[in-house]
Image 1 (tube, rainbow, N blue to C red):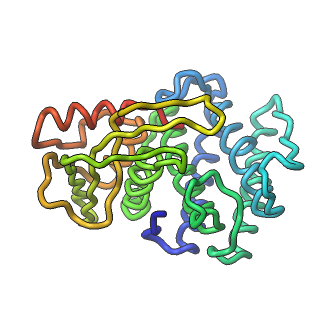
Image 2 (tube, one colour):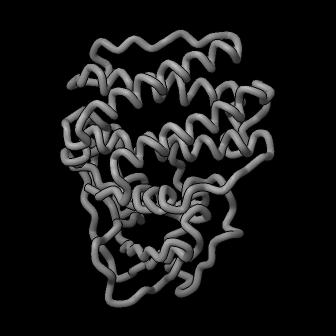
Length: 272
């Protein structure tokens, strides 16, 4: 479990603003234009992804609180026009924000998180604010009009991506921490995060995935005894880099070269 740095209402404000900015950008973009960070997607695909695939599904989860997210869910049909895609996004976004606003962030709800403590409305609000932020950046990169990411939301996102997207250990797996500590300095917000490199192993219950001593990392709550590696940059630069949306031009790395090679290998893993 990771504790969000922002309040539930603040996450909802960011969810509204980031979604609105993406909408405004893609409403006037060529729907066939490629998405630089996601080469398989067009601008139309990106608009459909956030509205028809992501926010529509999570709005339904918030409204119905299923035990299984597939139990009774009916996905929408993808419209052929940009106008139709915008209507799907508008309807899904309004439902999602309303459902999250009317509930308590501590209320239980299905999420894909391994930690039961993260199966809450608060987790959904945080994840959806950060989802919208990253895809807003995607949309801006399509049209070449990239605007600054909010530092506070980005700092929340750096913690999330390290703890959950890269550092989450499923219940069927095991993480064996090693002696290598990495410090992350967010130069504009003053935040300092620590991760520890180690080895991951385990086999999923259905046998479809098996890992043996693969490099992995874990976000830790307390500073390590010393940092083998220091990664620094603004919260926005680190957030965009960790999500593979930009190169490392805004990131500074200093310390042990072998430790960085291991870290770089971990961070090359694709994340959605």
